[in-house]
Length: 216
Image (cartoon, rainbow, N blue to C red; front, side, top):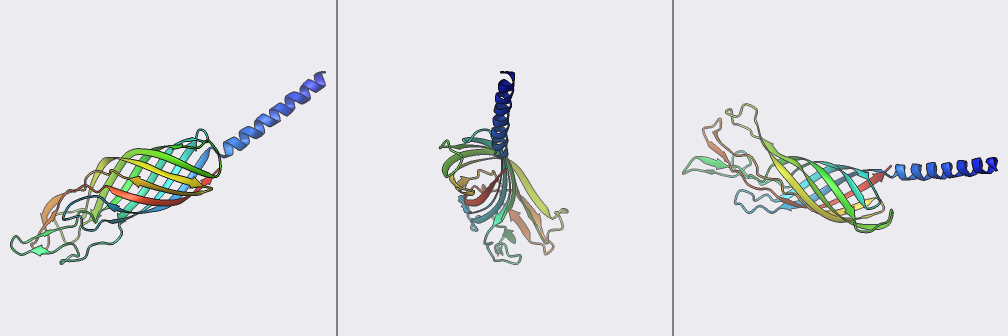
């Protein structure tokens, strides 16, 4: 009897350990992807609206339906506006002022994220909704302006990002809206005596994202 109990106990322990190992092997996900989109800013100095983003996501999967993690991304204008003596708008001769394109901003974003799958299964087609919150920094280099000793301007904002999409195998497709806050602003004189002006505008891009998820 003791031998049978020992064998049964050992068998149950083996099953539990095996199931835990399989479950644990799927607790973590890493996702790399790219997003293409457009800003929704309505401003005369936001004419370059196309955006491109590269992102990396990491998740801890609590269950087959719920995950929490982070997203790190870098983004910029996909097609910059060209014009003027520095490639950024024309100089108004009446005011001797050049107004830079506010939407030609790069961005670095860090978000904490929560994802909920609408179907309770581990594989196959799985639609999901997701919410992220964190910080977003708009920045860019400014040339020919000695008054800006660092030659770089930036502004950090609170950001949040709702997202919806689906997973099919390891592939991910989603649509996200990044509320990233406002860009930096300044008015200085460049090395040619031209007043250079950068207005603060809102850049809130809508992205179509594609990526691949690795589970381990």
